[in-house]
Image (tube, rainbow, N blue to C red; front, side, top):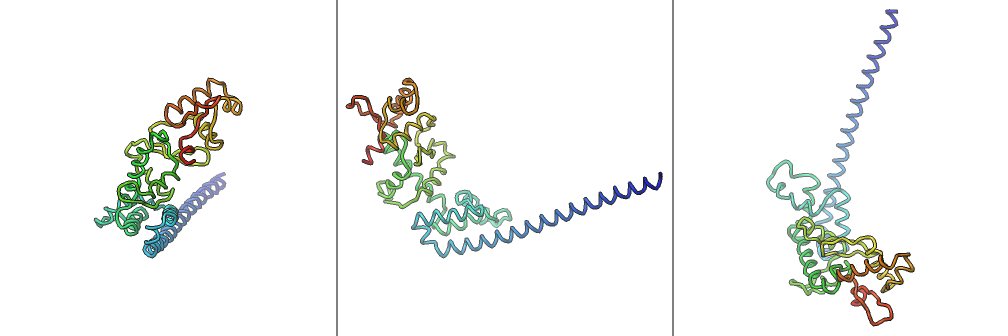
Length: 266
C-alpha cells in the first residue's frame, strides 16, 4: 500500500514538472515570435520610409497615390493623423517616442512638407466652407464626389486642391473631436457628408435611395412599392422637405419629390 502511494506521488511530481516545462517552452516561443515580428515590422518601417522619400512628389501631387500610401501605412499600424500628434516625443529624445506610431509623424511630415494635420485640416476647412455654401441647396447633405469637384474648382481661399475620397474621409474624421456635427453617411451606393447634426432614420434613407435610383418619388409610389401606409409616407416626405433634403414639384397631378442634388446635376 505504501509503495503504491509513493508511485502516485512521483507521477504527480513528474506531471507538474512536465507542465512547467511546457509553460516555459511556450513562453520562450512567444518571446521568439514577438522578437521576430518586431524585426519584420522594423524592416517594413524602413522600407516604407524609403518609399515615402523616393515617391514624395507623387504622394503630394496625386490623390490616388496618396490614398494607396495611406493604406500601406495602415496595414502596419501607422495612423498618419495619430502619428503626427506624438512626433514631439520623438524629437525630445525620450525612449517612449519610437515605434510604429512615431513613424507616422516622421514620414508624413517629410512627405507633405509639414505636419500632416495641416494638410487634412486645410481640406477639412474647405469642406466646412463648401457645406455652408451649399446647405440651402442640399439641406446639409452633399455627395463626396461633388465635394471633391468643388474643392478642385478652387472657389475657396487658396485656389484649387486635388483630393480623393480617402482625403475627404480623413478630413471629416479630423472634425469629429470638435463636435461639429459633420459625419459620413451612405445612401444607396453613394457616400455623403452630413453637415447638420441630425441622423437619418431608416425610412428617410430608403426614400433618398429611391430618389437616387428613380430621380423622384411620390407618396403613391412609396405606398405601392414599399407597402407603406399613406400616413407613413407623408410623414417621411414632410420631414425630408422640412430639412431641405428634397424639393417639391407641385405642378404635376401628384406632387413629386426630387433630390436637389439630382436637379443641380441635371
